[in-house]
Image (cartoon, rainbow, N blue to C red; front, side, top):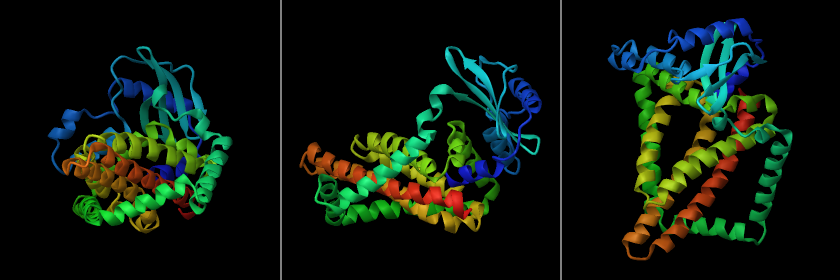
Amino acid sequence: MRWLLALALAFSFAAASPQAAREAVARWLEGKLSPKLEEILRAPPGEAPRLLQRYALFPPPPKGLSVNLESPKVEGNRVLFPAALGEEVGEVVVVLEGGEVRRVFFRPQGLALPPYLLTPAAGWGFLLLSLFWGFLLLQPSPFRAWFLEALALLRAQRGLYLFTNLFLYGLFALGSLLAYGMPELARAVQALFGGALEAIGLEEAVGKGVLVLAGVIFHWNFSQGLLLTGLVPALFLGLPVLLLNALRYFAFGFALSPAVLGPTFLLHLPTLLLELQAYILVTFGGLALLAHTARGEGYRKGLRALFLSFYLGAFFLLLAAWYEAWEVRFLL
């Protein structure tokens, strides 16, 4: 997420032109800005990365999308136009840099971050939650007991835990190494990831301060990464989450390789280690669920191992959110 937030911060002070944005949307709707997927698949190796990156920056408009070009709303370097896709309302976002169009995409209303997450109250609330969680870990409490039980689980099943770390971190390292041979393609994959995150409005949190930014980062990583694509597939005896994270770690390594990030990779390394460890923990929990069930110890006992791992993973995401927020605001 760091590269997306940093990119948004770098362009946040530029004023956008509604007329230039209006013309860009008209061309986008006519299909003049977005390459077709067939073009990318048929393109020669030297041309495919450029087309893929353009596809990420200018995803094709959905069929049936209607846009109100007469009611632009300017927010810094962005111009937003009301839009609708059937009964689903949203907005078409145009991002400009130095008067030139950098991105055009449709953002459905349901995909955007909840507005309350971008308020100062939400930022202070996340700070209080973090301090309260830390306080509970230092006092005799269920939160401390679960934390210690989770650490004991890792020691008791250190072989499985070590395998999960070596397998997933290894795939990340493999992706990072391959990116050195295909840096243009790696940048294109990074643009795809960045476009997906930018489409939900994460860049808006950059200018809201460290507290809000940390809360938004935690909300996204916890809800989308640890819960929906971690805990939920892990409930099906672990294998689905292992396969999902195998693909995710390889793709992350490819897109976030030092070959692409350059010197900033070292600054971002603590974030990567903490966030990836959180997803490793929930993957380990899913495999522990599989092991307990296969040994005839019962699904319920394995489920407790999964939830303990999930709880520990959430704590790692908490630490990662605070570091990443400080990294984006003060280290870049």
